[in-house]
Image 1: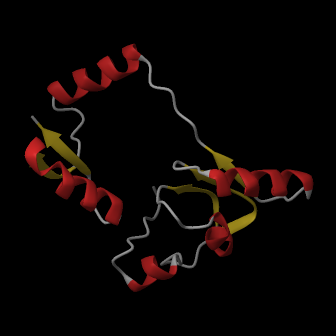
Image 2: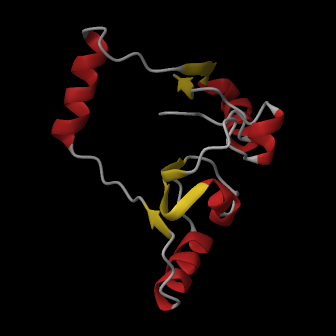
Image 3: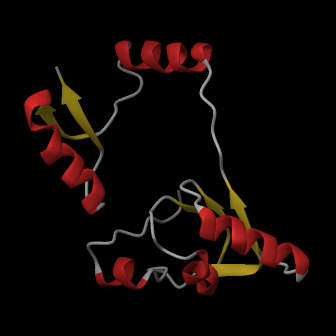
Length: 130
């Protein structure tokens, strides 16, 4: 990534590019932020790839298609395959990929883990262990 917007900073909260640059592609990884929020940071033919698409995303995609907009919203849907997950596990075991873990909770405190997840402010993955 050329730049990352950290929601804990004033620029991040405002979703403004710190450098003022315009981008061809923005990877949108947060829930409940409309894609149009990123428009000011896009080039004239820029694209926003939404990694957490919901119903609103699909409606925006349809609207952009029927209006022939040059800026595009692209929902990213994934379907993990066993061999790809095994490859990621191998990279983790070899130390080549280091997952970021926000917190670890015992199963008896799964409610706390869920609340933290819903809050949307975790820095990394939230784990629940038996």
